[in-house]
Image (cartoon, rainbow, N blue to C red; front, side):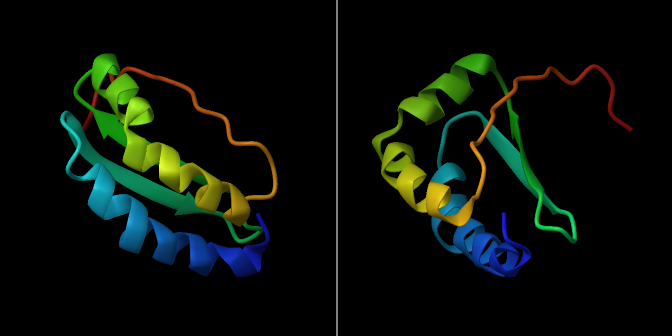
Length: 87
């Protein structure tokens, strides 16, 4: 992502994406991490993998994907991890 777009991305997450995802069953929170060069990671915390699938199937989520893609430069990759330890 162009570093100039990082503020746009942050605003978009807070104003559009955040309110929608916070209503999703099983959603526990997120972290938006941005490096000075514009590279970013959006880490979402969920109760289960089923909740993640429900979110990706959500029509509201699908409607926001094109807007999100306009803010990014490279393809978006989604990986699933399970938390084994938290301090």
